[in-house]
Length: 367
Image 1 (cartoon, rainbow, N blue to C red):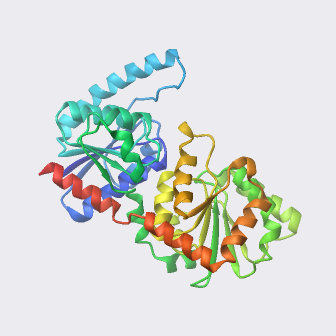
Image 2: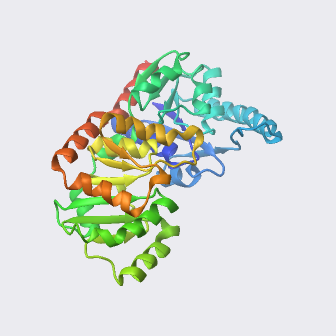
Image 3: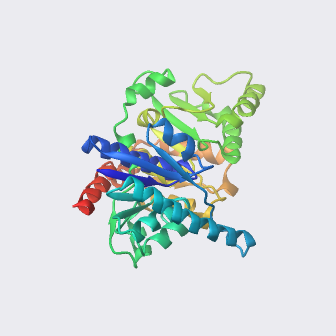
């Protein structure tokens, strides 16, 4: 089996592709891969670390306003299609998979024009521009949210798979998570994360909430700030309190996030689709603070899907403060019945078999 993967710009597009590659390799040990990404995207550093051959194309996204830059984007797209066709003819894949981001546009489009079976995976509740365009050409559209299927009425086939990143996290060892945090197995952990790079609004709320955490001594709070916010957050808390409360850790980054998630009782986070898939695969209740700085406000729509199902509470940034965040945490963690019902709702949304479902579709297309 020969598979071309494409997707990039953010980890939310890259990690699902890598999860599919991992599942393919597990089911088809002789599988060979090629990843086609952007020259400047995060994929150019992440993918080679996974020992997957990587080729780059020069591509950029469309601007939402009329702009001369969009003319250049069209030219880059056409050149990207031409380059992609050359790479595909050389590699001779059995299937091409795009997981979002503008870089997969020319790659998947080229595959369709060459008659190569193709799949796109949409992570968000609101489909992105690239996937909406590609859906008319590909063999199959896979979606993370069941309600998203209606957005692809012109597609040949739409399947509800969930997000393949869920499969990776579902298999994580929670005891390793406890050990990495230096906590006893079975501890109640509240994880507050601002995303891989951090988020100012969430970090400000962490600082304001720090004086309250010692009132819940049986709960272990873990703040993950992102590298840029680590020192200012730590200094702000210690300057006010003198030292960190015994039940609070402040970390710049977590390198073993799947294992830490596996030992988490409640998470506070943004509402990126891949992260939501991870927490749902483990049945973790969540307090979601959607980023307002994303296309089509898709994070709030992702978050509202979980809220509607009873798996999450949503706090929009204008209402976010240390007091409102702590009140929400306290309400959930001090009410076992509420925590249990949110956990069950989260688990119902989870699709830990997601990567397997996509690989199953790959096998069907090749046959």
